[in-house]
Amino acid sequence: MFIEIILVSFCGSLLCLDRVFIQTMISRPVVIAPLIGLLLHNPYAGLIIGALIELIWIDRLPIGTYVPPNDSIAAVAATSTALIAGSQLGGASHELIAFAVLLAIPCGIIARQLDVLIIKSNDILSDRALEDAKENNIKAIERKNYLGLIKVFSSYIIFLFAAQIIFIPFVIWVYPKFNATLLKALSFTYYFLPLLGIAVAINMLKLRRTIPVFCALFLVAAFILEIFHV
Image (tube, rainbow, N blue to C red):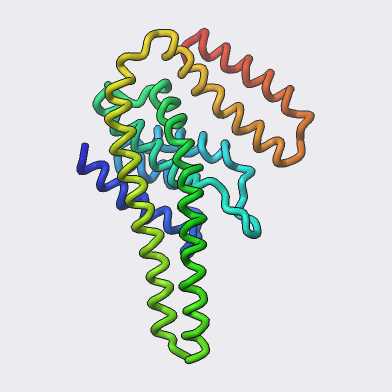
């Protein structure tokens, strides 16, 4: 388990660099979570977790000076928690996935504050790079860019490692103690999270009149699936 935590911390941080470097969209939850799932031998569960987190913050776009919640970190933490803990608890069930997502959502908000601090600290590097540019010192500018990337990577790897060290043993300890009522609530949460996310997406697209219709259809479908245990 400890080796898996270290591996996920390293690979997850490397993939999260896409948020600030190259930006090929592999840091999006719907991509990064299945990749972490593939690393942990369950890409399908990773895809489900990534889709849930993608929908929750789909309207939080990095426009202008706004720094959105770090959904990449949240997706990695949720996937790792569900799959590594699930390997000790008989599999990543719907209830366990819902629990892992609920635990990981605050990570995205906390990591956002970390991103803000990194951005502010990089202002100093930016000012120094401007001075280097005046002196036509290209090598010094390159070093400052690499230093900024190293700062982001090291911050993310420490954050992910700490989150997993806390969440995974906690889930392994507390999840078996949940009674039938709590497990039923988590089961409903698993089906409710996509509804919440799609409602956010519809609201972002200014299609508010379709929300009640979609909610009704979703609840009917979820009810039918629950009855027939699909």
